[in-house]
Image (cartoon, rainbow, N blue to C red):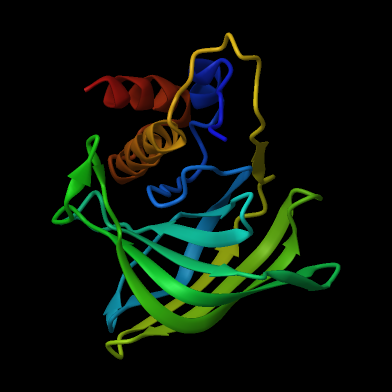
Length: 218
């Protein structure tokens, strides 16, 4: 069953300050949540990166993932996802997700419909989320994974305390225009990159929304 979207333009505007996830391999997503903060640790195959957000996605089939857009000046499509199944809430404020694959996107990956197709690397690892999405507050996310080639991935994300943006995606009326979820979420990625540009260029808060909107139109 394909997801139908209502008032996509309004949703995009409301998510200007959110992070982004692209799941080209997941045609359906029923929960999308974005968290703002910073990565105290973000390592990809021994390389250090920074980030300002992490996104959580869940599909009806049970697969979940923590997606991290990397602040990479050489690659504005550099995104990694810690992906797995059978996530469970060990305690009220502790969610654990066993990782069985890493999804790796970059500017050099092949594209479909203009979107990068992720390289899928079988991996072993785990992610732990301290906090509760239902309460719209997560304090930290830690992930470690090693792929079949021996490359290691590490994440320690700390929230800045702002409320989480949670979107439950459901089927809408049949007469609503249909959009591919990956296309809508790709617009969220553009928003994030424009927000990062605003931060780098030190755009004043009062001018930030106009800057981001103009950036998205370019």
